[in-house]
Length: 177
Ligand code: FES
Ligand code: FES
Picture 1 (cartoon, helix red, strand yellow):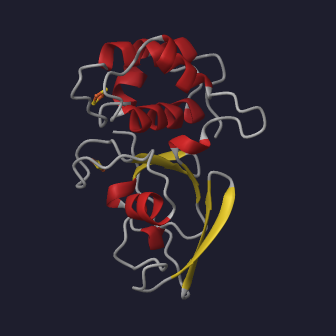
Picture 2 (cartoon, helix red, strand yellow):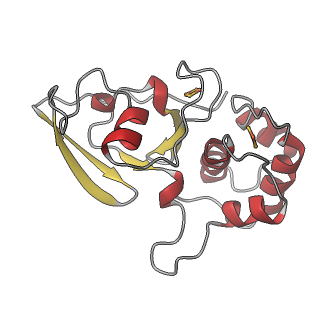
Picture 3 (spheres, protein in one colour):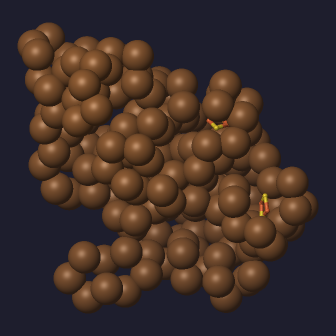
């Protein structure tokens, strides 16, 4: 499975991250505006930063719906402590759109074009896992896509359309975030 864990730990009373290209800094502590050492990245993104595009389903590393990118690689944000991400560049589904033109990422557009979702709950994680693959391998084979998405579950059985959507972008420069 392509999803990786990041091991960079904050070493002061503060933690700095780049989230969708914007610098954010938190005090570490247990007050409401602070990041507790027990907070997962999924919790910080959703509850502290309001980036609810990142979905939490199983909350124990089994479904892939909480996948985000750190330094271009896929991680499970429900299994990653925020303090482990010190200095990292995080990309969530909200950050994939081109910030200047507002244009959707080619993968986002391809998911729409191929109707590669039903309820859409797994979709942010699917797209970010696919993005991590294209960052590493811009022209993957179908088997590479299946392997990269093997940790992303879809209860609506949209996997066939997802595969088509990702393959439509493969080889067209859909990586590099
Ligand atoms: S919510 Fe993180 S893997 Fe399921
Ligand atoms: S589209 Fe519903 S879980 Fe995947």
